[in-house]
Image (cartoon, rainbow, N blue to C red; front, top):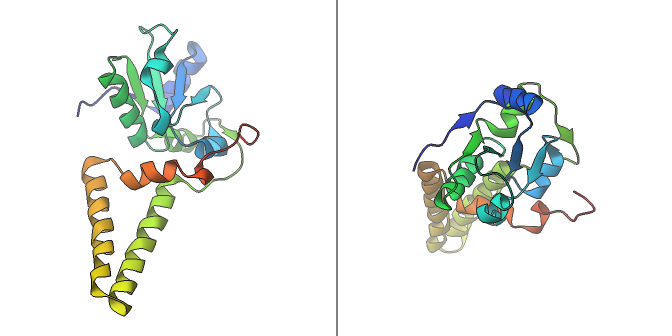
Amino acid sequence: MIHLPTISAQRLADQIQQHGVELIDVRTPAEFREAHLECARNVPLTTLDPHAVMRGRDKQLPLYLICQAGSRGDSACQKFLVAGYENVVNVAGGTRAWIEAGLPVVRGRKAVSLERQVRIAAGSLVLLGAMLGYFWNVNFIGLSAFVGAGLLFAGVTDRCGMALLLARMPWNQCSSASC
């Protein structure tokens, strides 16, 4: 994996104030609705098409990508790189770093973060597997082992299949009226 350029929240704020930038927020629509940068456009990572984003824009100008904490932004940068677009920059620390720096955001209705949803789902599945294995059939312990292996894979590769699945769930989408 190639590490692409990053920019700090404060430096991005300076860039926005001085020149204006094109900023793509790759979080789920529900996360975007909760808090986002005013100049950001929401294109969820699950539906991101680099060619569609780049259509009609000057490819020499940098494209900034932001997510909640940085890893989905990095994944988005990798997608652009694979598609042949190299002038992409990930916002280090994502929206969380932006807010912690005291920079302004547009706030909307609260949502449960994708990271928290993964922890809830994984914990529930591990507990369910352990309980079913103890009370019903020992083979159900395999469910806990499967989730544990998935978490290990996510930790090593920084790619979480459960997060990608949860991002597509209806509660992480929003109608045009509620966004």
